[in-house]
Length: 486
Image (cartoon, rainbow, N blue to C red; front, top):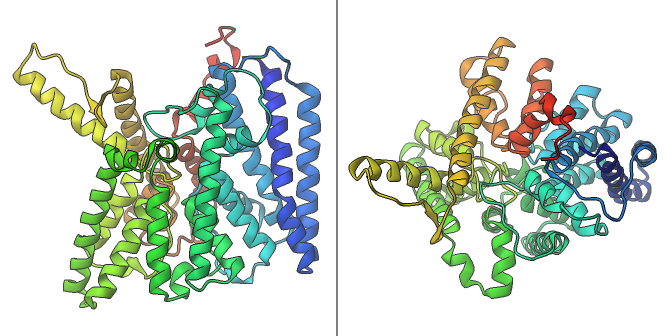
């Protein structure tokens, strides 16, 4: 592995992080939040210092190529470094202690949206804006946004894109990697702008509209009120949010292709059609259950069902009602939606619908081969045959998620949390949702977790956002010491 290349690009990333802190720094000055301004100034200085040290050690040359190991190292270490630098405003401003600052930063950038702040309404606007920005930058991917904005840095960027983007299939829509990243980023910005306008028209103030738009399209879910969306009691806003949460759960690569070839691409996409079918069925089940068991008015039950199914399946985690009080059937459906997640290539977390489709088709294929031993066939998705390696990777990821869920739940039970709460927090964390049932509740507060569980939550949020294997590769001794360039 060429450590000089890794250090050079990490230096650019820390510079990018410092630049991202300038808007909340300016906002703090404008609103007279001088403590917050000082905290952001310190954070910017630390970013510049990190950039200087990394660039002194590393750097890029014209003929440098980024290989698999460089891509994994840049992505994994980049996310770790940005998360550490991102905690500085919370800690230096005196809003949180060191551990809670780390949890808030990792939760923000990973798109989990779980907070340890019990009263977010007392925070200054600059900190609230930084929380939303961390969600937004982490949603599409720090490195993808960096690739879209910064100049070309040599060949091999596909390895970085593969290490950070989510899903079993990682295809590019344009020949050049940077053009591909720019296209994804453009769609991301346009959707965020449209979402902010929609929220403004639904009655939100500009600051609230922008903040909620960033965290909606990023499917992060950070809000500026303790009760998130329940504070508004606005039916139009809830339906608007549900629409944009579902849109954010679709593949952004699909939207790029749809922009070039027509909207029919979206409706022909098997994964997105399946996702829409699942959330419609889930919403009908939850609405019927709420009407029958809790005697809610049909319109209110349907509205709550649509909103929370969209919120939890997209792993955004916004809350319009306390779904922790729902009947067991509704809670079970919502838990399954958390575990499922959105589509591959979206900002949503979870297993991804594409993986579920591939696994079901793989099982069906195995059954057919048992009946017809000479059968030669392949699993297909959207009418295209899928390589066996992709199908096996979906199975491996499913196994890894289940194992990680059990491990995190075991850690929390060891730390004194009961079985039900441990399972809920584990599924919520690994799916990058935030809210859940029990100890963390519908408002996604992790403040009640013991310190050791909080620290472990940071690790598992990090694993979840980079889909486990990118992070695990960093712990392999051969990754750092082997002279072979993969």
